[in-house]
Length: 110
Image (tube, rainbow, N blue to C red; front, top):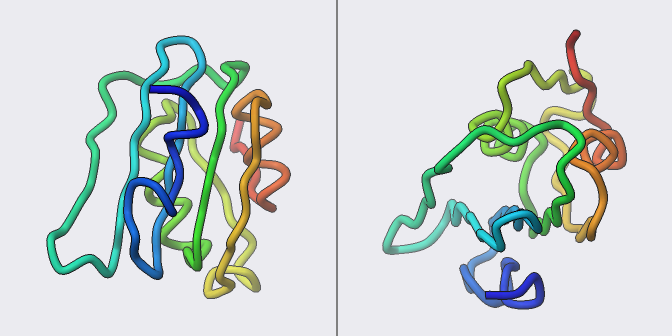
């Protein structure tokens, strides 16, 4: 599977979704929140903050997205309170995980 095959439009076909693709091992993980058949891929490992990833979202609230991404991290992700209910539709491609989180408006707690 390539990064073009890992995205909400390809994997979920629902209105609310998030996917993460890891370039190191070519793995794709998605969570589809409003699917009649619940889909949630479980992470096989924790990701390093420098690891190259692609994150694809479709109408995901910042709360849903942070909870989804936290399962892949061995560090805490912080989301500004004023953005918790904001919905995000974006694709961040081939960037380190820490940069992807920053582009999404999230912070890493050290």
